[in-house]
Image 1 (cartoon, rainbow, N blue to C red):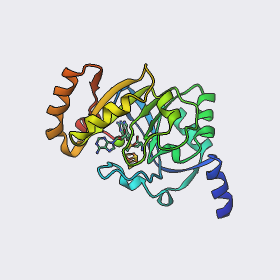
Image 2: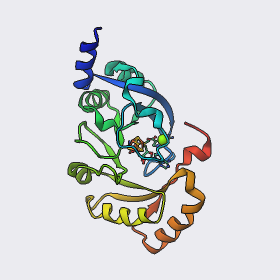
Image 3: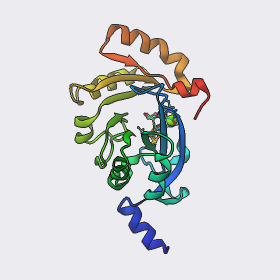
Image 4: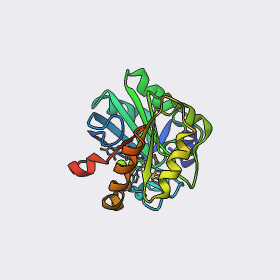
Length: 210
Ligand SMILES: C[S@@+](CC[C@H](N)C(=O)[O-])C[C@H]1O[C@@H](n2cnc3c(N)ncnc32)[C@H](O)[C@@H]1O
Ligand SMILES: Nc1nc2[nH]cc(C(=O)O)c2c(=O)[nH]1
Ligand code: SF4
Ligand SMILES: [Mg+2]
């Protein structure tokens, strides 16, 4: 296929820069402990200094892949598909999620919410970032809010973000991995004093799985 055709298909969400796919246990948030197939789409320009998948950022290093191929493969592993990245909302998630839904699969997204919400979702995990705040429709539709805590100020940021989500949204504080020993005690005290929040850990990292 010529380059322009590939670019047009990516533009329409019919092809996506695919970084990796893996069947694992959802490590974080509401569905932690549950088997799911992960699709990691390349491309993100939010720029979190502690991001644990910086290799995802440059979309050009990940091969444009036809969504039919991604969908058929995912369906052979699990009935729950987590789309992550990179930032999945960099791209039009409509065609991919419609294809997954047509196969009867549950669609979950991990997103910063920084861009227009596209796609059909059974579950939206919003992890807002100070550098590029979420757009209003993601606050309205988020099922869980997962704020990463790197320092004390992130607890203030978490409360600001909690004011913007819908009333049913479940609230999580997740330690930034590299400073977990320092921030976990702070999160524990905070959740006991403010029990509307729950702790989320990156349990897959403790389990040594992807
Ligand atoms: C790599 S991001 C990809 C999806 C999307 N760009 C986002 O940030 O939500 C997946 C999840 O990992 C979280 N995360 C990334 N780096 C982390 C770290 N060093 N410690 C804890 N959580 C991290 C993000 O906040 C997000 O909830
Ligand atoms: N096991 C596992 N659970 C996860 N939950 C969110 C992840 C992500 O990177 O989006 C992730 C991940 O990378 N692995
Ligand atoms: S928004 Fe997500 S993928 Fe992008 S830099 Fe931040 S944590 Fe990494
Ligand atoms: Mg991860």
